[in-house]
Length: 490
Image 1 (cartoon, one colour):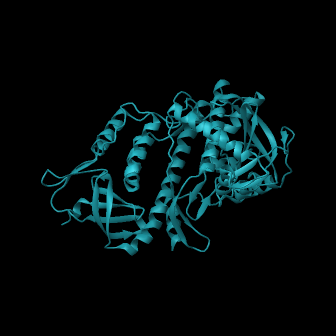
Image 2: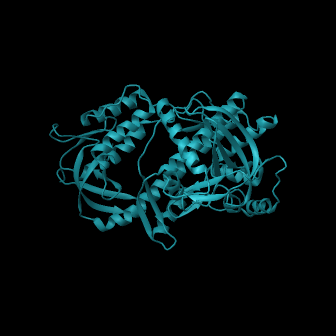
Image 3: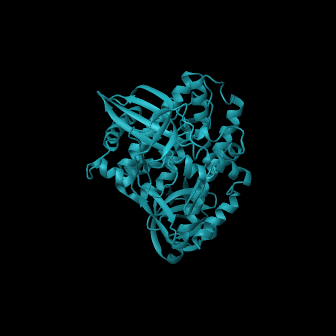
């Protein structure tokens, strides 16, 4: 039952789920070739490890971290996909068309055939792999004193999951490897540096929804541990260096840009938060948005969950663009690109090609016009994949909600539309709609200001208000959940 709901989401969006015979044949031939490491630095003896989720299969990044005098030397090794997927080949066209891998509750729709993504390009333990490395010497203030890029042959010494790495970082478990402990020391430095820049740090549990091999549905919230944060900071630092490297050499590429939120959106958010006694500056830094959610979380986790879509929706969506001056508002970075995931994101593969061309003195692979078109295309495929993931989770959660028909709940208003208003119910882990047609009398609404006005003109319901609702209808095939407002129903 669960898989069929995800099947429907995939079919509705017409995703490219299979590779052609030509593409599969090309991938198999490439995977069978001996490694050509003639242009590589031999780093097989260096202590590289991978740290990923327990269910990960495509390991596209490995890290090595050690102290060097008063600084820390961090090396991020990324699978050298560009050695295997050459421009304008069938595999390249297939990857470009897809734009990215798609992660759904019961499957991954890969950007590249699995013989590459889970095979020769995956940094599996104790297997030699070609990589593009970024080596960074970082001081006690979290500033990169120097960095360099080079192609390397590595051999990952271990595959760790987040829980195992976190136990080592906490000192709960002894390890033969020094990288985890030094990496956590560095990550704390980098997080403090991000805070000083005004970058956003969201320390919130992540919702998960998966279907196990035996067909069981598993949902809930998973706290991000210190190993998640450590890897995140390492990847952000490598991405920043990649952008700087290409800008310094006047090499065009797709930057990961994130514009400041509009003044109007910030004003509307401030008006919504004001009745709660929560404020946000007129010209906020990214960190101020995290502070808002932390203030809501301190009162009620359900309130914070209800406010999250509105608070994050105030922010602009990150984009791919050759414009190098926009920067990344959320991370408070003047220069940023995506470098660390070429197995699953096509823009990262383009970044690798641009770096390698710059290192060799070759012409830039793509010009401005091509990059503008590719940026728009990859942004669209990213949005499509994100919406498919959300829609899949919503439909699956609806199945469980079917058992709760006619149950009463206390929730928070989380959004307003011309048809009704959304309510977030923490007990269900799902949003549903109270339709205006179910309310007694004529109710007005101001979608922009996120308020609903009762027929008496005195009762006003705002986003973030508590409200009692009853679950009356669930349609898993559409991901639709309907409530009635217990105190205002016909």
